[in-house]
Amino acid sequence: DGRTAYVPIYGNSGVGKPGTDGRNIVVIDIAARKVTGNIDFGHGVRPHCVLFGPKDGMLYVTTELDNSVSVIDPRTLKIVGSIPTGQTESHMLAITRDGKRGYTANVGPGTVSVLDLETRKTLEVIPVSPQVQRISISPDDRMAFTADQTKPRLAVIDTATNKVKNWVPLPAPGYGTASTPDGRWLVVALPSANKVAVVDLVSMKVAHMIDVPAAPQEILMRPDGRMAYASCDSSQKVAALRVSDWTVEKLIDAGKGADGLAWAEPR
Image 1 (cartoon, rainbow, N blue to C red):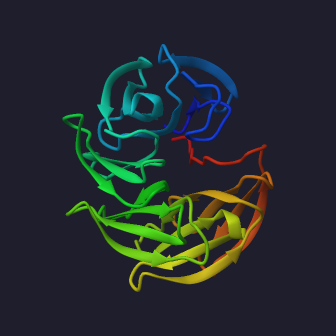
Image 2 (image 1 turned 120 degrees about the vertical axis):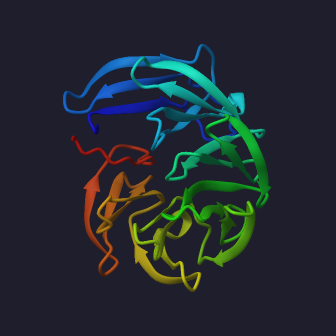
């Protein structure tokens, strides 16, 4: 309903690196800016990416150290299930619009796990590269995208066959991605280049490049498709990108280490 944020407490280090192992999710009333609840996993799991199931209303969260995606009932704040990914470092998650499939980007193994969210089973593990980061799905659910971290290229996975169908060359290694609602464009963060690339999903080529503040990480598309947002980690900014002409409309001040983005609009 756009009123509550579910914030995973991951730890104090990057994926696969030594550090504290988070074990909880903090529940925040957005309007009041107050903590209203806590979900404790009982042990360190490094919870990271939290998404709502579009059909069942459950919360799905990657729990890396358990090699799983945990299922939480947001009404009771209880953990009601677990879906194995079959891989370590299952860092990010994307869910199809019908709520039936989940895809995790498994960083260190360089794979993508395909999950059946209804039976809560692993369907397949797709080899991609020695290391990957982030994942998103096209609006028609036909393609999943994850960024190779060893070469400047983006893997395009055919969700019908669960195989890498295409590679999109990039000017620099990619990171977070998001499609425009019409499925025409894919916006890709390029952290090492301090740029955002816009891929034409018809030609599968980079069509536009946008300069942004240092170290863009995550990409969020506004629901109306008119704006895209890029969190810029080391610069503590979020760049608001106008889709009509692919320019930076404004920079929004953010906190240290700005990364994950989510859209909340009270209804």
